[in-house]
Image (cartoon, rainbow, N blue to C red; front, side):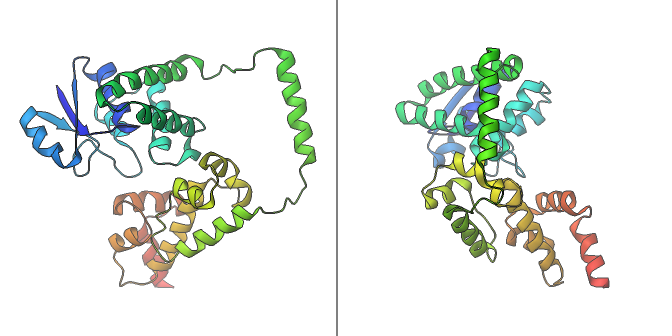
Length: 281
């Protein structure tokens, strides 16, 4: 089977071909073309497009194309499911989803920078995802620090560091600036990405992701932004002039179904029922 996507792949557009060749169709041919040529070339080559908008094999809700392939082909291997979270975090710049996401992004970006031929890039990327699969399948519980002495020293050192931290640590400048940025975005659709914010603060995204919860209600970046979106949605639901689709857009969700799912998970009610309760008061 032929598959086709946009040129210059990095995360999803290498992870998906890896998944296709390893678990769906070992003989699959993968084509990379400029974005504006994907649809025409798909017809010419009898190829299925993936990881482009308005196609079956693409992002959905808060998930990536890799997630869709797993669901479409009912691939239930636990190692693949663990990989999916890492790939999603790397592909969406939400490194809070998995500690390995930032590393996968860094390696993938560096690989794409070094290799200009997309097919060579795919072949090298296949090795990376083979390695990631082996780790997810066999090595997740294995630590780099092996000897009991090393582990004991690290434990003592970390305990010492914890004791040195003041009970009420001063909020750093970057966290204050970040709160101001988020506050400024509340009146928009809160379409913030950790990578863009980190660039604006001139701090590495991995550091911001790791330290974020200390200064934002013990929540990860993604959890905090979702909390603000739901709070804004509650305010908008009080106005019957707004449709649920409009509220989903105004609060930064990809579509109404995504909004409904997250809203229900946060409040225990779907938006329409919640609105009825509000309007009765």
